[in-house]
Length: 192
Image 1 (cartoon, rainbow, N blue to C red):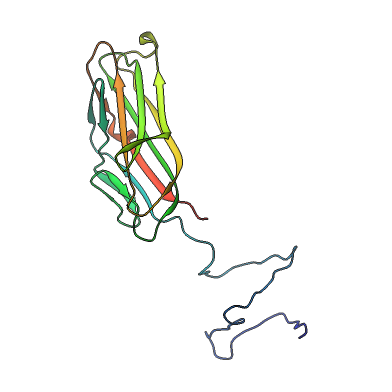
Image 2: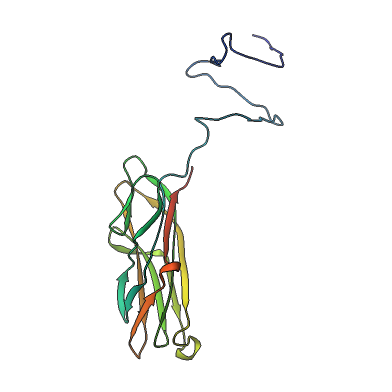
């Protein structure tokens, strides 16, 4: 029970392993001590997986006064193969808090009065992760692209699934196009 002072510790064999302590031991790093890592670390911290980002290569038609599920045909990345059939499903062993975002931009032939964006969990809209925009008809001209971003943090269980929905309303009716290059649905598990 004493203090060992040295400037370098190496294993006996080249490229060997040095083990500090055994199961149940605690190593304390005092306040003011700086640890510098110039090598590869494993077993520290965590990773923000699952993570996914999906987008579109073509526009999606949106009908007036209709709730429409956004569809995505391109997976930019999907770490756990958890995105399929236009929804993200929490994989086994991956419950926890997730940061979720989706954005959509659209334009049409008539002025948009109301736009709403929703993240649905297990088939139901979540009141704490949605966007609702209401305009006077003369504030958003026909043909002008407009959009919004919906984001939030959700506590998800295994097998919970998420989908992105949009609702547009105009008294003049008409159809709208969700612009492909701007439709994105993405998320990742937060390290806790």
